Length: 521
Image 1 (cartoon, rainbow, N blue to C red):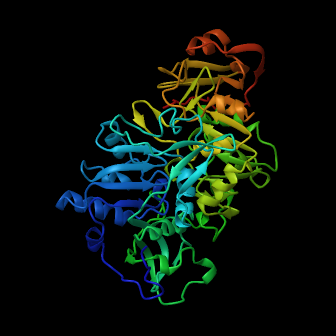
Image 2: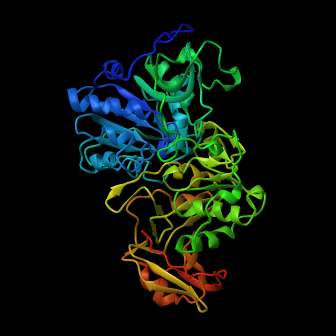
Image 3: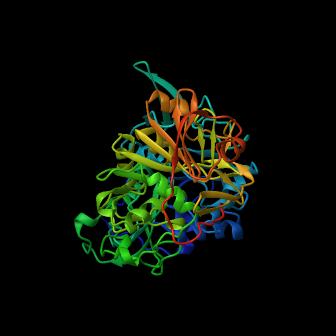
């Protein structure tokens, strides 16, 4: 086991030295989250560039919790040169599409584990356990009886085991052996104590550093501020210096991939709600308004990326943001989650937890309701968000959240690829139907298991711009349609299966001043 440098002054090294420290064939953990949150971007790009120039380090095994990147060549896409990586185990892949393309092309071994599982796996690894025993992932594609989290044909090693303890099924995820860990902090003193005061989330740097040091590995940290000894308030230190080996001082570092610095993301200042953009009238707003009806004041509510993030914008517009607490997997509770690439950052959070603690809350059933996206839904109530359209996006925190919350509401357009709708005096009109149906016989990948939801006795709804379904023992039941929608023409004819239809209520959409026309992706 590696003996840390204790409390001595930590070496301050240049970026060029980083590639010399990381050996070929090493197992590498990279911290951060999608949209540039706490992303050690200078370290990542330096390693990727070193391989392109010198061919080393090569054959790396890469672990990461969340998606890391900006969907535009940043983040983990710097490693997307064939030969740089041998294997990737990640919680989300969609922020680095070039890396996902390597998995699709069978260039690397590729696994997708739930984001919360990886956060918890780091924690138990750092405390000396052999792995993580959990129910998270049962009956989904992570279950070894389904796909074992493997994403292509060349990936054959089983990294997840099904075990039975006291007649109950669990999944066992073995502890990783991490050789090098790359992190980003706001500040470090000369002894390596780290604080994260300007970061848009706390995430899991302590858990990652502990897991790395448990294996005798090396922790390298990119920092914006390099300070004298004891300059950081001890209560602000999130990673103690004895877990840090090297510091790299990078003064110019943006808080997110699109924002240099937003104090409203840190809790230092509060952003006036009226300064935030109003959600435009359109398809996304319709779905958000229909889903919003499932929230009661005083509830703790999770929002996923995509369609669901509009729900927080509605709460702000309606001056109800103080009566609902939104929670995202990056650790924030309260405030208004940012949308798009920056999802995971939150304006005016009330509480910011480490990611592993947030997943304790999610897995423990402390959420009242969760709103998630949906790319495909099948006749059994299964939902796919992790693999569709020929690419890999990954599950992120989706599996933890959907298996730990009593009430789950999936949100999305009814079809995709050119869908256009109008709202008028007669209700909703489908002016152009989408080319791709989302309600299919069988999903391509089971990210949410309808069978597991029935075992857990969860309440499950599927909300679209024209119809609302619920999960029952027989499958999907149509329970509401929007005024102006024809059930046979606009709903059943656009599905690959016929839902259960009993009593169907008609919903009238709120009046708007402008035409609600928007094209679904």
